[in-house]
Length: 492
Image 1 (cartoon, rainbow, N blue to C red):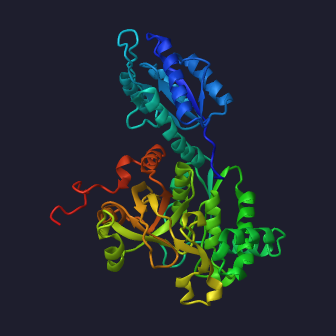
Image 2 (cartoon, rainbow, N blue to C red):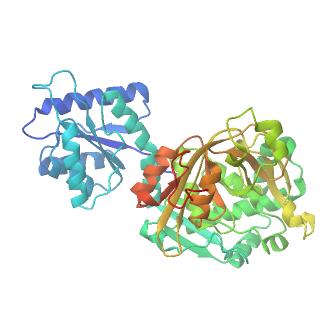
Image 3 (cartoon, rainbow, N blue to C red):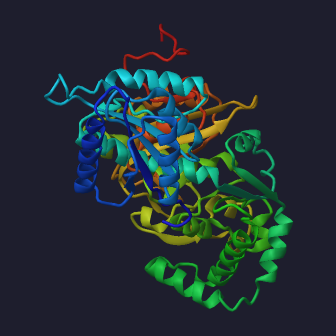
């Protein structure tokens, strides 16, 4: 995937000076061996300079991992650890940091390390220094268990590093009667993200300047190859190619000092009549390459997509939490075949912004809803089909009207059931969705747009949200049956 950082974690072992240094050395070496044997992706660099026991060692290790090009840090407590120098290491490192420690082995006399104890003091010292570090759910483990923790940290670190160098570029104010995705942008700056807001007129001018661009035929050919038999609107491909080149050139000219970019655009009410198409297919192509594009100037939707892309290392999509599943579909295709109540199913939909690799079949069509009131020819440009079945994570990060960061995460699946509908659409199933819908989504005043990551990535997303500053109490999830939401009526 393009448009994301490559993560290199500097593994630095630490040791309290009254413990044998050999404990940390040997355990670090066994951890690296376990990681390389299982993952072997080159994402972890073993700092060989020293075992950190003092502030001087800390500066030496910091310099070494900096020279090695590390953009994430793992502080490994091979024993109790030096609480001052190890937390200073995280404080002065420019990037996300994780703390883990070694579980005990058989020798509990000279070979006992007490990292289980040391992690408590490390966490307290991190708080004293206002350092926000990632500490896994079970941070003390064997070499194999710690190797798995390191691997999980890669996606979390990728999101944190990506956000630190991200710019979100938007075009146009939100459509009339569309306050749903409006939220204060202050939190973007709190997160270190740049925002560039542009007029649709600026975009239209740039689009017109790309008329006759010599690259258009090459892009059209690429679109034809992607669409295959689904190329049902060939007459619009040239304009769509012109628009795609406009966006890509805009990114190159406007990214400024930022390495990574996400877009947030607009497709109605005047876009179709002036541009002569809808941008959904182009949005899908860019998102499939790693440049998320949210619809309807949904800035926090674009941010959500980018976070999910970094965590999953895969394409994502943004969908409306749209409509209920009919009795007919549920009774014929879901009931007694899948372990979900009807209230746990719903349809996720958007006009046609999901990339082709995430659709079971796909073809280009016109935007049916817009075509009810406009000439059909100006609404061409959606890519439509049922979303591929399999595990998904539905999630979103959002600022409230009073400028607090909130988020939700829910794991589920797309069922292999025909939707009998239009757009990029799928039948989603999430355990206890009906209660989650009422007591997280409605109660929390979330808009109807939700981001979708393909696969179960709730654990990593939850940790990313915590790491970037969302209070754990502000992260909603689909609570299991028997666990009541605070706002849930106990007598219902």
